[in-house]
Length: 302
Image 1 (cartoon, rainbow, N blue to C red):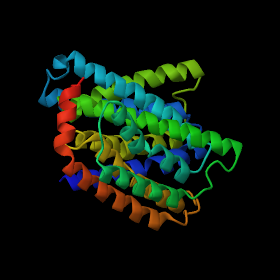
Image 2 (image 1 turned 90 degrees about the horizontal axis):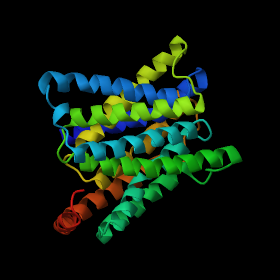
Image 3 (image 1 turned 45 degrees about the horizontal axis):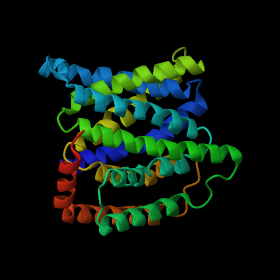
């Protein structure tokens, strides 16, 4: 079941880049409108089952759970702002690859908190990042506009890492539905404020624009993000972010098929390297679990 959820998550997030790029390129939809509606609709859809099954769930949210959810929501809002804007400036493959470097950022954030990663985990990260380079090649930043897009995508990756770490903390005691409703809802509010500040419209689009927003919401938000938020209850944030690396070849393939973007020459070799790196990280984390648990207990869950 876990593998199925992970596969659905990868397919969902892999569709995000091509769908967003296609919607922005063919309609009048703005970047922040996509970020707002995918979160607002996602929050409403996820809230329904929670209200029916656990009507008191939202009233039982603790201060700690709310705090970590708020951090995750803020990181997610700025992640979307960076990533979606990057897709307007650089290629889908480059933007997706750089934003998916969140696993590297997570490893760095964890080391700052005192986590000592076993050498197989670091080797696995290196192998997987070799796959990222193989897929994107060295054509990133080929123009000033593309360079800005690459830098925004890189920042989006750091924010995605923070979102995943904060979500992992919240999911220690929150159900998937409760957490995603709260996180997506607060993210939508933050994005709405950003749209008001930058004068980006959130409505008034044609039918094609709304269809694109719905497709992005269903595939990337409800299937992709929610699947990975579910996995955070049973997997470490680093491992979840490593699985998300599979989004890179998936997005490149979809962009080649539907947007006629040139498929990077190293796509298949990069996929093999990412899978190999993922396997090494999984093995390394299993061997290092007792030490990681001890360090987490010493640092505390807050």
